[in-house]
Structures are given as structure tokens and as C-alpha cells.
Amino acid sequence: MIGIQHYLFVSASLFCLGFLGILTRRNAVNVLMGIELVLNSANINLVAFSRFGPGNLQGQLFAVFVIVIAAAEVAVALAIVLTLYRLRRTPNLDEADILRG
Amino acid sequence: MDEVLQSVRRFLPELVLTGGLLLVVLVDATRARWRDGVNRFLTAASLLAALVLCGRLYGWSGELFSGMLVLDPMAVFFKVLLVAASLLVIVLFTFDNSRELHGLGQGEFYALMLAVTISNMLLATANDLAMLYLALEMVSITSYVMVAYMKGDRMSNEASLKYILFGAASTGGMLFGLSLLYGMTGTTSLPAIRDFLATGVGEQNRLAVYLFALLIFAGFGFKTAVVPFHFWCPDVYQGAPTPVTAFLSVAPKAAGFAIMLRFFYGSLATSATGPWDLAGTIDWPHILVLISVVTMTVGNVAALTQTNMKRLLAYSSIAHAGFIMMGVVALSENGARGMMIYLLVYLFMNLGAFLVVTLIHNQDRTFDLRDYPGLYRRAPFLTAAMAVFLFSLMGIPPLIGFMGKFYVFAAIIERGPVFYWYAVVAALNAAVAAFYYARILKTMIMDAGNEDRPAFALPALDQIAVMALVAANVLPLLWWSQVEGWARKSLALYTP
Image (cartoon, rainbow over the protein chains, first blue to last red):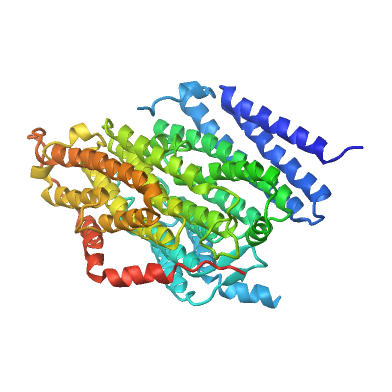
């Protein structure tokens, strides 16, 4: 029988994998994928808690909003990465290093 | 239906701004030659209308839209503050004289400005975890676009890239914390969460609540730029167009502190002891003291060695976030009042400093402090104005900056001997800050150089703008009892 622990285990793993991706990847698009994993891990949590928890729909409603926000955020992020590529011919984050100090 | 209509009546400022935003987009689509002037006027007019409408919201407190938003005197205070910040930025900074923004499309800028104002207001009044997250992301996403405004500029692009990656990661952490908090309490409404926590959390769950709140703090910390979520701040402030930098350093920061206050007092306090006392389950002040002390120290020490003015002001704004957090740490009515007054005075002093930096850039094309010698001779008026803003940022008595520091220090000392060391560390930090602010003035007034450059020719409108900000840094002291009375009147949080 699949219970809430299974969902929480999956979401915690996804969260850690996502953060690992954010911290270790050098390609900006891969970092964005890591961010998607983090957001979706929270979504799994919200929906699972809503299903197994108090029986209200607030969690599922929240999850729908998060999906929309994630799409908007990635759209803006991709536009910025595209501009980065146009200006420097690379999607590599290590090479964006003029601002420092 | 009746509830929605009632809510809409109390939601008028945001609706006016939304209408203004749509109009700006429409006018910009005409591609007519007059559109930029009309758009600037429309933006300023809708902000002004929103400001007037906000003032009429006093005297009522309750929930709007089935508990998604809340309206109470404190919400009105922050709405006024946030709208005023946007209005000041729109009025003070012009496109035509700016070296950075000249020639870029203006309509998008005004539309983004109105959008970020609406989302700031939603963030400051959020009463539900979903609304909180939505508003925070809406503020962030619009700010990312505003930072990237100079399309062909590598610094602007890099700044917004760092901003969006850092922001997405911290708000992702925050969202995970929010989802766990929902799982634990079974509700997304802040008052309901407070009721749940007030009935007592089991010993085994105490650590969990602590952990969730720390994850959620990542989002607030990112918006207010406190350590360890400050890494984006210097890069973004340096790379963004200066009007955007000036705006980011005051408005989203104020909204972030508003929601921090609302979250910590509104959802983690017990109803039995009133809105200003936290649930005894968690020992909050210690972790917040640590964050605040480290924030002001890191900001001040890093600012000592900066030569780029925007970067220097970025570190100074991190340090000020540490001072403002003293009001949150105090966890008392006086602490909240100190924080609100600090945010209010910070608006005028920081916008003033950024305005002078912009005007110098318009003339000399430089943000580098090493190009500032000789300014006293070339632009005595600007130097004198900068002196007022910097003394205000230092917290020297006859200026409003002093009042901000005064109230947060008083609130901390009032909490008893446990916090005396904290007040001492903060005072030492203020001394360090005075050193690097004074260094700017010393460079402008005493250092020799740039003898061959011509005197400044400031447009009359810019002179008036600078003069108005200087007046805003001095004159409020004459009517201080009214200002303080306003802040005191705004101290009520809505509790069902």
C-alpha cells in the first residue's frame, strides 16, 4: 500500500537532486532544469498532503498556481539565457564573470 | 458575491494601478511619437491616484477575497510606502537625460514598474501561503526583467542571470518549506496556521516547525537581501540600470520586511497573548539576532573596500537590512514601529544617494569613486546634497536617518540586558558605516584631481528633484510627532 511516506520520500529526493543540479551544473539550461525539479518536488508534497491530509483542496490549488509560476519563471529565465548566448556565444555560467569584487 | 464586492471596494488602489498598467501597454502599442510622455504621465497619475485611495483605507481591518489578502492599518502603511517609492522613482529619474537608458523603449519600463508595484502591495498584504508565494514570485519575476532592461549590455544581462538563478533557487527552497508547513498544519491560511500552532506543537514536531520556518526564511531573506541570501545583491545592483537599482533597494525590500513581519507575528504568534508575542514553542530571537548581526557586519566590512559607487551602495543596503532586522528581532510593538520608520526614512536617503550617483554618471559617464575628486569645485550643489544623504545614511542627528536608527536601537535596549551586546555590535557597525560614507565625501571635497573638467550643467528639473529629496531628509523632523503618530496608528495587525 502506497502511503504518504512514499510520496514524501520521492519529493525529498527530487528536492535534493534539484539542488545538486543547481549547485554543480555549469550550463545555464541545466541549472534551470534543477530549479524545475525543486519546484516540482514541492508540488508533489502539496498534492500528497492534500490527498492524505486534512481532505481540503488548498494544497492542490496551490500546486496549480506553482505550475503556472514555474512556467512564467522559466520563460523569463530562458529569455535571459538567450540574451547571454547572443552576447557571449556561450550558455556557460562560469564565463559570466565581469561583475565581481 | 457580496463578500467579493466588499473586497473589491477595498482593493481600489491595486485596481487603479492595474488599469494604468493596461493603458500604458495600449498607448505604447500605438507607436506614436508622443507615447513616452503620455505613458510617464499615466504612470505617475495612476500611482498618485493609488496613493490617495490608499489613504482612505484607514479605519477598517479584515480579510479580503475569502482570506487571501488582509487589510489592516499596517497593510495600509506599507501600501502607502510602496506606492510612494514607485512614484518617487518615476518622477525623479528621467529617461531622456540618462546615459544608460537613453534610446531604450520606455513603455515597457513603466508597465513593469506598475506591475511590480501591484505585486509589492499584494506581498505586503498576503494572508495565505499561496498568495504569499504568488506575490513574492510576481515581484521577483518583474524585477528580473527590469534588471535585464539594457538588452545589449553584458553587465545588465549578467546581473539579471545571477538574480534569476539565485532567486529561483531561494524561492524554490521557500516553496518546499511552505509545502511542508501546509502538510503539518493542514491549511494554507496564515491565521489558521497560527491557531494550529497556538494549540501547542508536540515536542517531536518543534524541530520540524523550526526547520520549515528556516526554509521559508530563504525567500524572505532573498527579497530583503540579508546574509546568507545576499550574494546576488552587489552584482545585481551594479549591473542593473541605476533607476532600477534605486527602486530595488527600497521597495521590494520594504515589501519583504512587511511579509516577514506578517509571517512571524501573524502566523507564529499565539492568539492568547496578542499579536506581538510569539508562540513559546520556538526560540526565535536567537536565530534572527545571529542573521541580523552577520548581515550588518558583512555589508559594512565589504563596503569598506569598494570603489564602484553602485556596488558600495549595494553593500551599504545589505548593512541597512541588518539594522532594519533589529526591529524584527525585538519582537515587540516598538520593534515593529522602529522597522516601519526605518524603512520610511531609508526610502528618502537611499533614493537621494542613488539620484546623485545617477546625475554624476549622466555628466561624467562614471560610477567609479576614483573619478569623484574635484566634484566639490565642479558641482558644489550636488556635493552638498550628497553630504546630506550620506550623513542621513550614517544616522547623524539632525537628519531623518537618525530617527530610523534611534527607534530600532531603543526597541532592542528595551528588551533588557540579554540584548545589550547586540546593541553594542550594531553601534560599532554604525561607526564602520560612517567611515566609508565619510570616505566618499572626503574624495568629493578634499581630494585633488579632474582640474581640467568643466563645471556641471544640471537641468533645472534635476536640481528641483535633488532639492526636494534634501528637504525630505531634513523637514520631517519639524513635524516628527505627526510622522510618529502615523506609524503608531499603523501598528495594528488584523487578528480574527
